[in-house]
Image (tube, rainbow, N blue to C red; front, side, top):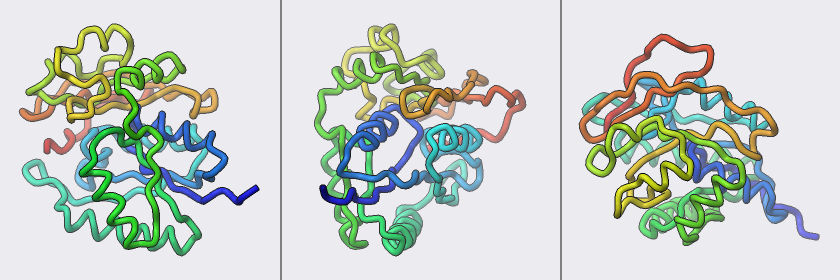
Length: 240
């Protein structure tokens, strides 16, 4: 039997990351050794998803994997530049490589350009990308996520594609039935992002979360998801 390849999971905290992580943890070819997430330095929230770092830390604790975070400089008008992101990622991949990690897992499904970009950058660091959900039917994938006991809420929606009422909603059969025509059930076209708070990967330790203020930032609408112990507002997440 071959030795499993050490792998770090590129973790957004959302449903696709959760389902991909579950697949990789059950694949004998890989040994998942950690999670990697980018955060807005200004708002201390998961990039693009707008989820508080406290909830991210609770996820990592429940999953039982060490968490590496990259903090990106952002402002309300100008989120982190690609140059900054690429520099930080290159440094981080080099550090992981030095530790013996040779693969990075992703929850990507259909975006070929994004996969090509990831694989090119990883190859420069002597790493490979692993995409366990790649080209799965997104309708089947969404229903599989629900039936397998994963639970998530929409943390952010594209205001041009979804009504503000979707922000904060539970990702369930009712939500899927309510999605407008043309909206991908997994949000593959950027229609929404999510926060996964329960499921097999959490080892019986769901993340208590409530829905706070809904924040309209023109292009995106954020549901401020609150840890059970948190009731006071914090700065709104980056809008781009």
